[in-house]
Amino acid sequence: MRIVKNKPIAIVIAIFLMLSMTASSMLIPNAKAASVTTWITYSYSAVSPDPIGVGQTINVNFWVDTPAPGFGSVWNNLQ
Image (cartoon, rainbow, N blue to C red; front, side):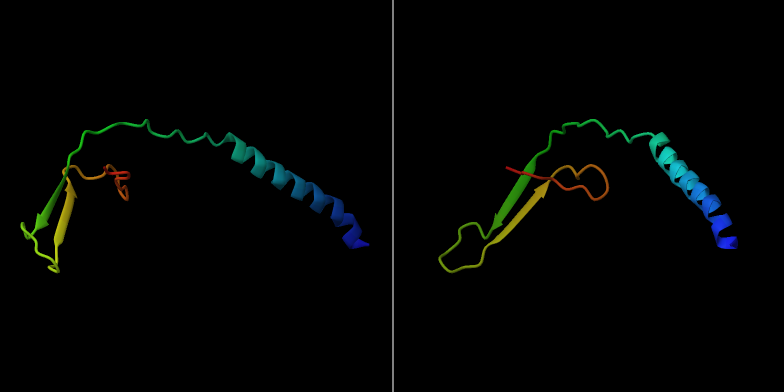
C-alpha cells in the first residue's frame, strides 16, 4: 500500500524536474557568431635546386605571410 501512495508524488516530482530542465534550456541565450572578415595575405613558394635535372629530387617550400586567425584555424582554398 505504501508504494501506491508515493507513486503520484514521484510522478509530480518527475514532471516538475522535466519542465524545469526544458525551461532552463530555453532561457539560455543563443550564441552569436563573429562576423566574417577578410584579410589580405600573400603566399610564397620556393623551389630548389633551381635548374633541376631529370631524375633529381626537388624540394618545394610554401608559406603564407600571415598566420591563420584564431587558435586551431587553418587557411583553406589557397590559390
